[in-house]
Image (cartoon, one colour):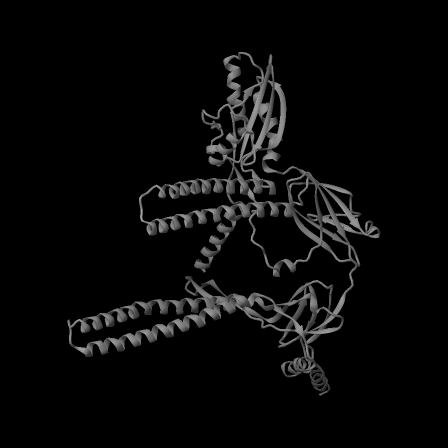
Length: 582
């Protein structure tokens, strides 16, 4: 139990690290004055104090929801850096190849040297071509994911199982994720200071962008201050790196003696920009016309009836569902980021149920479900039932009356007052198996055979995994003896051939030992291969079994099995009536 607990904690830590990915580093740069005049020493101090106060007023523990555009800029920047490095390598290799011509070498040697240099050059050129191809794929995936427009349009047609069983292409554009907002150098008093060569460059320049990428800064706050008497105007801008995209601007006016209020108001505006939780307008276009009044929109668990023309939500993932009696439910989960407005189109489709008969291949006591609906409960002569499908792929489950056995440690108090720990067995979850009905088998009144075996798959997979480890351990243990016997026999043969020894019986003995060790290693390898195959088969048992068309003899055979498996309810009723009469 302790080992499983540790493994579970490790998986949770890994999942958390994957979900929150890297930190999103926020920095602030020293502000500047808009006025070209001499300022007092106290006014000069505003340039550093204000950005520090803004960082201080920014809430700790913020989480940034990255956008698709942000992930695109990161990918393009990484690929550009890689291309520049490859080009430098290419330039060096070309110079080395050209310098070979000046060397006084023989023709054959010169030809070999040039061929070697050309192979290296071709390899780098191939890497550059692959990089350019990956860059195009990155842009194409961004356009496909976002709709390639300022106003994204999404037609909601959802098939949950098509995505599970379809082939997935290699994803170059990373998925949007949540990243913890951290301050530059983990210190709010530490401002971002560019090197002296680029200190005068504006924040949206390529020089500052490259420097921020090198220092792993994701965003920079820059500002301009205008002082008029006892009042000041502060204009702040937030730039996201790489890409030097202007994420937001704000101008605040206040008294120079109350800079904390100025910083607090600026931070209050910038916080949703930093977390990327800006409002997004969702415009709904619903068809056909007769469905608009009776359709219910469920947005993140909140129901709207009738469907409004527009709803404002925050940036991020949202779940949208359209529901209407007599029509198919349409639902989707989508990442709304990178745009302030989206048009969501959906065409409601009438629900035309298709009735299919489901037959258990190997009936045992239990209940067959399709989705959340009960198809039938197995009993005397009952191993078949009718269910409704809608033409889309469907997954169901058979739930047996038999349950798993869970071993738990329980404290028991003895008669003398001492407490001991005993291992007891308790009833766990029901034994189940899943089945899958593809679209091409969904025909009116067709009989489908459902195959599967209810079992404790977690224990079964764990058992097969342990046996595969044991088999592998035996194979690894046998290999040193086999290698030693082979080496010893070979050394004896060499010694005998070189006349260093004349005892051929020793060679024969080591030949026997070698053959025995090789036989043991071969047997353990076969044992490992068999156990590995059984483990892989056990791991794949969690996948749903495909339903197939049932033949008349399959239906009859399934029904006949229930006659011997269950009691006849009529006979049981007759026995009860006879006992009551007596």
